[in-house]
Length: 160
Length: 253
Image (cartoon, rainbow over all chains, first blue to last red):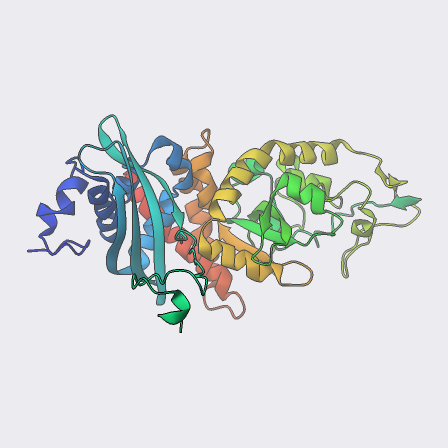
């Protein structure tokens, strides 16, 4: 058994290998994982073939090939998936791929966008190092009811 | 004010980096090892507006906006002669030489009124600037201007694909960090990036045909720079790009 590079714990042939060989990816996340595995396996043509037309101008197969062959892949972490399911037409996947390139540790953190093109999922680009939504801090006034739900004033309860 | 200049074909300027138009770069892929060189320019610099127009602008983390010149370049170490320089010291491709060589010593990357210092020969150059040489620059206007105008027009034509390429690439955090670092240099710094990243945007260029011409040049320069002190960055660039191109051609069969 060859463990799949995507880290699913499955055999390569039962996981990303089938998609790299031509099977359609059922979900956006499946395509994202297959693209990671294709990179790890040096299958650069798969990376090019699963790009949306508008994203092809951003893809340099020459550099991708040399990066793929010089990188030691250390794992994929899928952080968040939005839509991109079996019945969806679009979706996005936030992931972190870790690798060493010519000895240097690298982290590729991307929020990748996916959509269906003629029924098949394709990658339509993405944003590197995406920022989360801005944090909102609500200030509680001293005389307002305490947010802990005690019914007391904040200043008599948690804010004391 | 009048400035005189006559090229004596001393060949002293035929060394090191040579910025090229995209068309000249592609046409000379079998001759020059190509790189894309990004040069930062701070706000207030004379060529800021022109550089922003022909290249792009980037907002730094400190919210200052810098201009970046994006130049396809024959990426040759400064002490190496141009590969087209023949053993007799003359240009081997003079009739077909790139626009950059034709316009020398003027530079269309700068405003027409800001060219005077380019007419002062650099140390060791044998340019003729005596009374015997013709007047080439008068009242901040170039006298024989065909080559300058032609090269400037080529730079204007390529600005759209170059900006699309650069604005996308600068979203890569590693490229952005390199630009930040370059911008910290007081006189502007540079970043050397792979030439191949522009190819997918050039519909009319066949990447495989380009690579077949460029690969032997990269291999030759990788060999010439192997183990040479001070040229490790050049060697790494040639080697890594040659490896990527060799693989790319192998995949294409």
